[in-house]
Length: 445
Image (cartoon, rainbow, N blue to C red; front, side, top):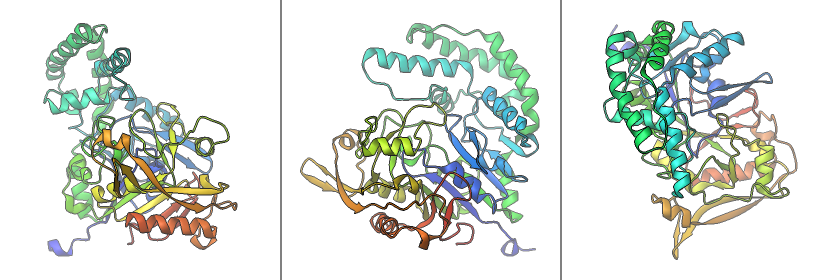
C-alpha cells in the first residue's frame, strides 16, 4: 500500500480559550465516542477536569478524560510534568470506581518528574511573595513551575530515569542539593532528605514501568492505522506562559500549537482546533480580569454566576472570580490557536438574567481597542466596552437542539460568533455528556 492509500485518522485538539475551567473535560469525554485515543500534552495535576456521566461526578487531574470511555487508549505526552505519587493515587481511585486504567494508560518516558522538593519550593515561594508584599502568583502549590524550571535548565529527572536506579540516585543527589540550598538559604524552608525520596521513587518505579512508553511513536503508528486521536489541553490560552496575562500564568504552553511538541508528533497531524469557551468568564487566582463583576455579594449578577455555575476550582476548591464574556480576549485566543470552531459551555447559567452583557473591546488611555492587549499592566487598566442583550426566562438546561433554545439565547450566541470571527459548533447546556447541542461535529467537519 502506498503512503497516499494509508487510511490515516482524523485528529482534534481541544483547548481552553479563557483562563481555564471552561469545561474541557466534559467535552473531551463527549467526543471520545469518535476517538480511539486521548492525549494530555502539557501541564500537570494542577489541571482539573470534572466529568458528569449519568449523574455521577468524576474529577480527573492528570489522567486524560478519555479514561472514562471503555476501550479508549490514554496517553500522557512528554510535555506533561508528572508527580508519580499523585498519578498512582489517581489510578487507584479510578480503579476503586471500577475503571480499568493500567492496561490502556501510556506515559511518555520523556516526562519530567515532580518530586517533593518541587512542591516545597513552590509553596515557600508563594509564602515569601505574600509576606514581602510583592503579591502571590496564585499557583496551586503542586510543584508544577519548579519542575518545568528544571526541565528548561536541563537538569530534570524524567520518567525514564526511574528505570535506572544508579542514574536516578546520582541525578537526585545533585538536584536535591540545589533545591535544599534554595529552601534553606532563601525561602525560609527546611531541607529534605535524600533517602526517603529515593526509596519512594524506586517503589513507585516498579508500578509505573509497565505503563512507560514511546508515546510519540505510538501516536504516529496509530494515526497511520486510521485511529482518531484527541489532544486534550489543560488550563486555558490566557494562562499560557508566552501568550497569557504574564506573570499571572501557568508554566507551560496551553495553546493548540503545543499539542504537536507536547505529544511528540508533527503539526500535520492536527486537523481541527476546538476552543472551549464559557458563556461568561471566570478566573482562579491573581491577575488582571477586565470584565470581573462583584461576585461575593448576594443579589448581584456576579453572585448569580458564581453560585448557579458552582464556580469553585476542581483542584484547589478556590472560588473562581466571575464576570461577563470577554469577546475581545476571546478574539486573541481564536487567533493564537487557529480555532476551527468553538464549544460554548454553561449557557444554562445565564438563564433568568434580565440582561446579558458582552465585552467587545476596551477603552485604554483615550484609545479604543478591539482585542486584548499583550501587556499585563495595560490589561489591568482596560475599561471594558459592553454590548447589552435582553435575557431569557426559559430554561436552557439539558436542551439538545438549537431550535429549542430561547430566541434571545440564539441571538446572543449569533452575536458572539460575529464578534469573534469563529463559528460555534457545539453548545453545552449542562454538566452531563448528553447535555449538548451539536451543530457541526469536529470529527466529521
